[in-house]
Length: 265
Ligand SMILES: CC(C)(COP(=O)(O)OP(=O)(O)OC[C@H]1O[C@@H](n2cnc3c(N)ncnc32)[C@H](O)[C@@H]1OP(=O)(O)O)[C@@H](O)C(=O)NCCC(=O)NCCS
Image (tube, rainbow, N blue to C red):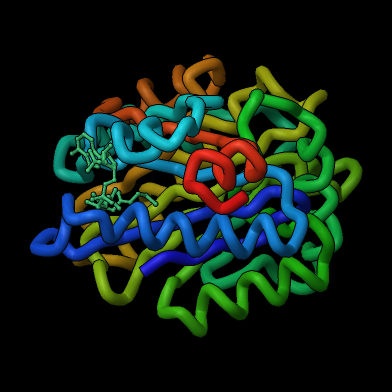
């Protein structure tokens, strides 16, 4: 199968060939079809996210895709967590912040503030290609949460509220898939600029792990992805017990170049 998701002006590609049918040119044919569509419809660039050290790396490189961004996947094993230290992190937030656990979705009275917190970090450029959709308006956020539920992905959220203003200044999101309930995915973790350095990021992630332990008894690990240059988040993750294990690479290519290389024009 091949799919292409349009995000702004970039087409995000996914290609999967059954292991028994690989290395016979099927991947190339699927890519050719995707590129023909992208070219005919006037898109300029394709992006793809691939796990490091797999066949997908030489596959995309052979067509001229260039690596644009590297993320590190880290995994936390729940049975290795030091719960005592974690408890200190969860309660170690500065005065004036209230932490709130929100299973399924932020409450309606916080959704505007929640969306604003997400919007406030939109401009922070870590250099990635923005290959994932992001919802930072209340209606899109509600739709995105409803879609997660419909797909059997249960979201859990912890927010930090700045009590004097009522603003949401920190949030962390984890999703547990019904079809794979032993491994959760860490989605966004955000601390709004101006509220960094007060223990908020560490506290919300630590509280999340306590809540996951009590709400998801089958859960054994949590995986997360960080930009290799996002040092503050990497430090928090290390303190919590996340262990880096694999690179994830974002590649991009120009549609016109691909079309020429694949003999489409
Ligand atoms: C990546 C993938 C789609 C390739 O499919 P495929 O049908 O085996 O690829 P093709 O046979 O069409 O290979 C096309 C070219 O890619 C390159 N290539 C593919 N696999 C390669 C490998 N293991 N080592 C080196 N080059 C490789 C070669 O240049 C090849 O051309 P050649 O046969 O003339 O040498 C397949 O390995 C796969 O499904 N992987 C798992 C899913 C995945 O990770 N997808 C990527 C994320 S979207």
